Amino acid sequence: MTTVSDMSINVTNRPTREQLEQIYDILDECFTVGRAFFQERLDRDNAYDPDTTWFAMVDGQIAANVQIFPLSIRVGQAILKTGAMGSVGTDTKYRGMGLAHKILHAQTEYMKESDYDISFLLASKHAFYEKAGWRLIPETAYSIDKPASFEQQSVYDIIPFEPRYLDDIRSIYEQFNQNRTYTVVRNETYWNDLLSWPEWRKLDCLLLLQNNKVVAYGMIEKKETEQVFINEILYLDEALDGVEHLFHALCQLRPNAKQILAMLPEDHHLYSYFHQHQAQSIQIHLAMWKMINLKSTFQKLQPELENRLIGNASIADQELHIALQCGEDRVYLDYKQQRLSISDVSSTQAYERIEVDERNLITYIMFGYHSTDAPMARAEHANILQALFPKQQAVFYSADKF
Image (cartoon, rainbow, N blue to C red):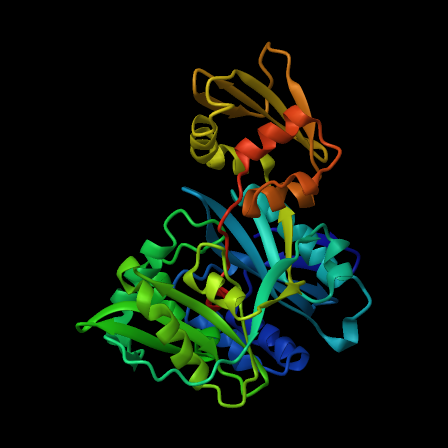
């Protein structure tokens, strides 16, 4: 158990069941979704670790809490241990005391000690989390007018999801997202738990079948509003001609919708479809990020970064010695004879120093480097950053929200 004390305020983790019930009461008071939403998320998570539930006590009374949801997030072939922050709530009697910030600072130290690499959260109160070190990185969604019904003859069948098809959609998810940055690694336990989590019940899921084989699936949020999000449409290569058919079927589940929105990487079949239908770009200001451990992040990225350098024609046969500075932290990248090593200790070579701020570095890792991100960067630095962090077809699926 880790404890941080400040006068009558005590910040700790590993609540008893009785304390956890009090935490649910606070969340029930803070959020309209009700206590069951939060309780079910933890009670139905077979990987739940009480270490990840943190709370503040004032004079012995539980007053605030923040939950860490551990996620494994891909960056190409690498996997980063990610602390997803959620269930942030403070009892109304204790607001204004900085309790949530005290918890977030304690959790940051805990994550550093527990092999986490990065952290992110989804929030609208950006200034609040900026003060605790998280940085907003906007993302882009696309919106089109809801299409009319799709009556074209098709060799595909569309049916509602049933649990017996879980292995089919899990296989499609894995194939579609192999080495896809920003996606969550969903193992068998995660999939089984996911179906019982509150976020799943916010979705309708349809399956696309060809000759009785599931070749694609799609999810749309359960809202009777004018704007509705498509959460994910994933497919096998053989189902490419059926993707639009599945999309139209999902749209017809929402008769009140006027606009359909989606987060689409450029390699998704619907990306071109949306743009052919005059898609409007919408900036989504929700995801906030924090670097937890620069060294471990880059050590886990090492195989991916090495492959990127080898695959870059202008860099592959060079010798590089880079001191990458991010805030007060620094890692050394030594690339020689197509082998990359990463350390927080310099060797005897003279290093080329490249300085990046935390927000930009996480943007490069998740989405790729673009020269407009750092217009004053030296040309040789820009070339190196472009080689290390090429554009990613990145996407985060909202079924994994926390």
